[in-house]
Length: 254
Image (cartoon, rainbow, N blue to C red; front, side):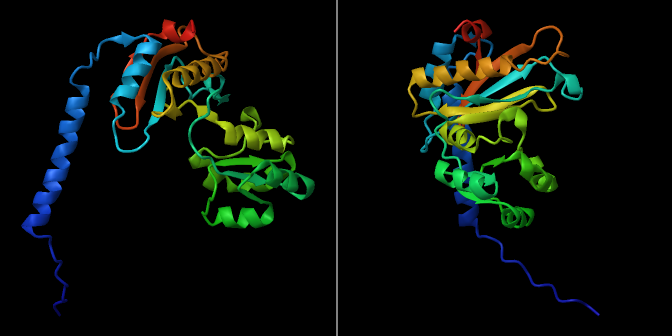
């Protein structure tokens, strides 16, 4: 018996021409934005920041991002790099904070400005895959419960950890740090640390200050198992803009 298959309605030629026109604009814009860039050059911090801001010409406030190549092999436990950096000028991003706590600590979290607070009730919500927060904080006594959410929080890099201050009894300080621009970082399998450290609307001084603070925070987490050069390469870019390699000396000396 022949089955009847419903035919699909394909877009007409006009739709294809419109799509082609939109797609053709992107490479041209990128090429124009990168036309005067020397890919082999290492820029001083001030010059790199100036160029990144100049090239951030999208119709939205682009995020300024940093990428650091480290001389580590994260497959070895003694070469893991993980920490948190309190950006002096904030991240420019509105961060929603979720807190696992009970009783007085739950009330403290609410007063500190946490967006979501709960215990078993919050566990049930998160366990179903609903996360109404960007940063997760927990009191130590709640980690037995929160630990069961590893499959949900782990892949998103949101599992609370005492090393980055998200498992703590000082809930007020943790919430305010998260809201105020604290950025967590963790080295990837390829040995790279990446993070957003500001917005294109920031002043050059604000961006440079955040870069210095972030590089310093990562340097302080150099593991004992790292041999040779720890900080191999640093580059910055905006969300839609080209990347610029930094002269490491200009960052370290600053």
